[in-house]
Image (cartoon, rainbow over all chains, first blue to last red; front, side, top):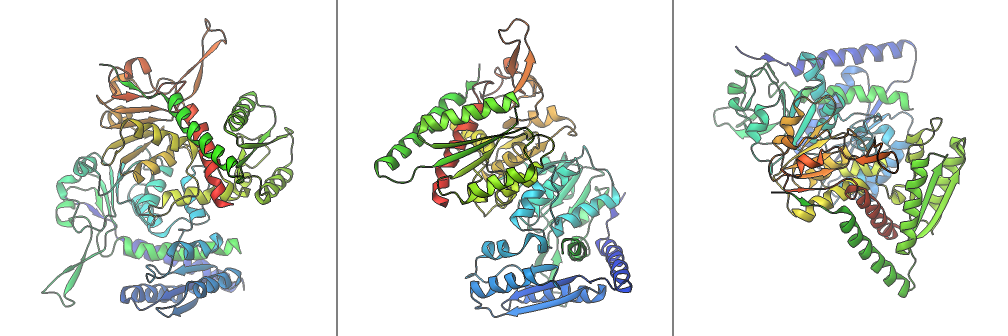
Length: 290
Length: 290
């Protein structure tokens, strides 16, 4: 038996097609189109690649794009003033500040400056707080956790009553994923580097979401037979024989886990494309908050 | 063997004594004293009792008290305008709106109106969001979860690596308690009415926090020998022979659990007094945000 592969790329394509259709309809009706502002500070090559990929996707879908490329030494005030201007700009529905920022900038202060109504990443504390309240709806759900939930629901629409091990407690992925799993009536356990007997917790879980940033952490024999395994890890490991000198691997040892899981997402081609698709979905949704 | 009893009343007294000392020192130095505004809407007798108890405690500790007693039919706008005025009032450091509100009022809108700097209950989404971010500090931690953590740490200062079952996922108790446990490097499992095999999850937990509002839910044989059990439940059950016709019981079957736990909090005299003490501690802390 080998697990069903949850094809994040394919699922993301179908979500993007829906968005594209909705935007074409808006165009035909001469309704305002959503706009996304991306802010990149400095020269980190990975950040540059991520932003370029997001801008390309907006173009593909018909979302207007406003990109800001700031100097590595940009002062805090200049960045915050830009955000304040974009908060007021009616052409801009979403504001995305690519993280991490250079060390002299306060990431928290910057993120708190973004209007919660334009927080298409879904990471402003106000939205994170609403997410943690069972009877409140955040204006935006965070992108990666939303992608994770969509992937799980693509193979199992109703996860209520299931146990879920969430490995990693970051504010961008682990913690909000746990909250979203609870909103779906699953029972999440929030695991991290201090957790003891992580293997046993995984073995008792119907769902494993691995977001620890630790290559191959989750072994096949940690997986309960039939479980759903979502691998959020994106780790670069050396690969002498590969064309780029490295390869991408997840937090799950795919080769062994695929033999036990009921469904599993690969790396690459799993969560990564979903995160961008959900960002685009949030940008379209942001039109409602104009 | 019988468990150590975690005496919430005694612990709360020692916290209140520290607050009283700090306020006396402020008085002697002619520094501004903290002030707490309490807002009660309508005639719910339980709410009235809670508010009276909070006002009495402020008086005992030397905290200035401003109480507002609004009519059952008070319009949303009137309540929000009162809060906006109190947000600007330099004599008021904390604003407490007693919940639940009458049905015609939007609780969310009301709570969002309170300045996060005066949110001494620690339940504004902005503060809840900061709580969920590992590297951020909320301006205020929510009162009951703070009390729970203090009680746990009174018998076990370092809980890192411990498994914790949190039963109940409310925005006031369960969810923030899980986040605070994770901040202490424990591994929380967020359980609720859809959770399967709750008894087994409890048996594998070094800490149980019961906040389900279900009398006697946690049985003694659910408790891992030596575990720390905190009972947040406050349930009124009929008691024909008692003077008031009812008695207060928690979510834990105390008689059986006390024989297995390492430490356990009773009801009454457990979490209840701690919640008020932490509210007072937050009100004192709020002076820093003036």
